Length: 67
Image 1: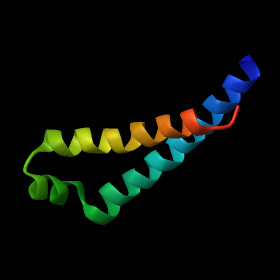
Image 2 (image 1 turned 60 degrees about the vertical axis):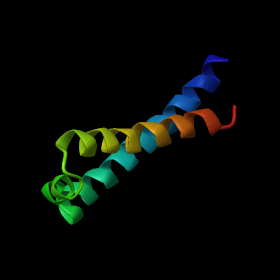
Image 3 (image 1 turned 60 degrees about the horizontal axis):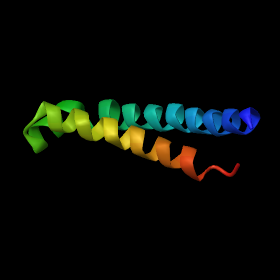
Image 4 (image 1 turned 45 degrees about the vertical axis):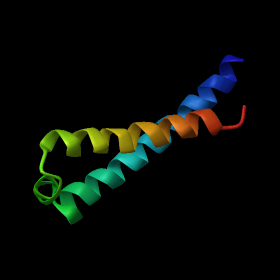
């Protein structure tokens, strides 16, 4: 049982690292963070949105990984 949970955690952690790196590259390199803040009008909205864009897919990978 514990081995199966370790596998799910491993896959979710790997997805988290890759997805986080891609979003950092897109936001800091391509889109420019300040541009997003100017577009949405709030630093807080942009930060919360980016955090949710990382956490929600990571949880989905954890939940849907086969046991």
